[in-house]
Amino acid sequence: MSDLLLAIDQGTTGTTVALFDKSCKMIAKVNTEFRQIFPKPGWVEHDLDDIWSSVEQSLKSCLDMAKVSPQDIRGIGITNQRETTGLWNRASGKPAHNAIVWQCRRTAPFCQKLKDSGVEDIFRKKTGLVLDPYFSGTKLRWLLDNVEGLRPEAEAGDLCFGTMDTYLVYKLTKGKAHVTDVSNASRTLMMDLDSLQWDEKLLDLLGIPAAVLPRIRSSSEIYGHTAGVKNLPDGIPICGIAGDQQAALFGQACFDPGSVKCTYGTGAFVLMNTGDRKVLSDKGLLTTVAWKLGDKTSYALEGSVFIAGAAVQWLRDGLGIIDSSPDIEPLAASVDSSDGVVFVPALAGLGAPRWNPHARGIITGITRGTTKAHLARATLEGIAFQVRDVVEAMRQDSEENLSFFRVDGGASQNDLLLQFQSDLLSVELHRPKVIETTAAGAAMLAGLAVGVWKDQDDIRRHWSMEKRFQPKADAETVQQHLDRWQAAVEKA
Figure 1: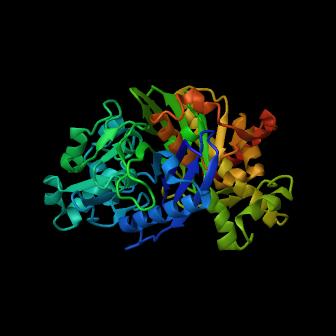
Figure 2 (figure 1 turned 90 degrees about the vertical axis):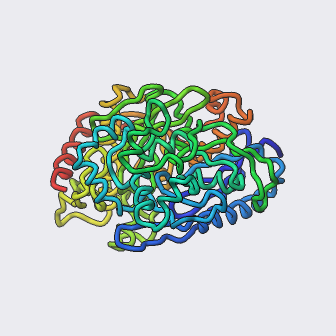
Figure 3 (figure 1 turned 180 degrees about the horizontal axis):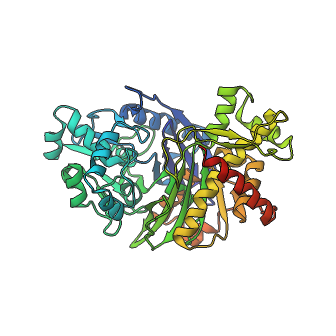
């Protein structure tokens, strides 16, 4: 077997390594979890050594499971939890501090200080992002200001900053490559969306020395070759990089402007390809780089729903209504409707397009006839309503009509959820045969760089659908649903 592509999907709670063949079929997949570190309330960290160990373990187990020769691997693609910020010694590779995770809120005071100084619009226009602790730039600033000795080392060029893609490429190449791709760089608050380069004005506002930053590269090219990696021969090209949500968009073959995917996980992430148009949202969405292939850059609009699968976990763990997450579908399907019950799952505030951190979950429409089945159904509908709000904002911002809507992630296996989503959007939903679309996207980007596939059309031919969901509800019924949702969400 040859023309194998190895994908490393470095996630928030674990690292997945998967092998794909030329037909985009996944041959093997292994996930290894690692520690979550919570030094203070609202603070989240990862140990970079833990992350690298999880990569090594997943890599060994995946190759053992697949029973293939590592010599047959044509290239390695990397996709990663975005915004998580690492800093390590350039010469030794030793971490300077734990990585600060995307979820960490410790830089909220600095973000507020920047907002109060009147520079938020500068960041929005240059980066397409909002000033929020979510993004990498303020995390890097915190490390330089709060860990003794790091700022002078950074200014001298002795430290490397990177999101997790950068760290993995550094480790895989034994320190020879200090790079990132445009999709990850676009999540740092430091890259200009037009020039696709680090921006001096933004670096000055954040107090970041340029000497610490990686080179920004495209999403599909050879960045370096393996050197001294356990269980892999030297010389394998590392040749694809994209942040996890952009990789999923690529893995779903959403190559055309107006194509949209939603990943239903703990939260839900919706991305719309806007092609070469950089659409700045006035509806509460983020503008980001989808990928860059050669000289061609594709942009995307992104909306994040904070609570999706987590609402189902709350029914399981918080209320004890179900024993396991998959139990929600048969329970919800045991009733014909939610019988007027609406659940707004704002358990961690509301994300796009409302961005209300103070919103809280609310259940309306309860009567003596309400059962746990009605609440289960209302929970699934609440996920779909939030996603619909994001998609509607995208339609308005982009002025694009959706031709289809592709889905992935754990909750995409729930047919009842997807049918209701299709009804709300009045558009077809496509669920792929390979739902590991994030890893698949990384493998596809790597394969393009080394000629496994000649172009995106070649890849598109290998994308295959497992199930199609078509809208069944009439317009009047959909509007009644939306009116109930709007009334409830205003109370949250």
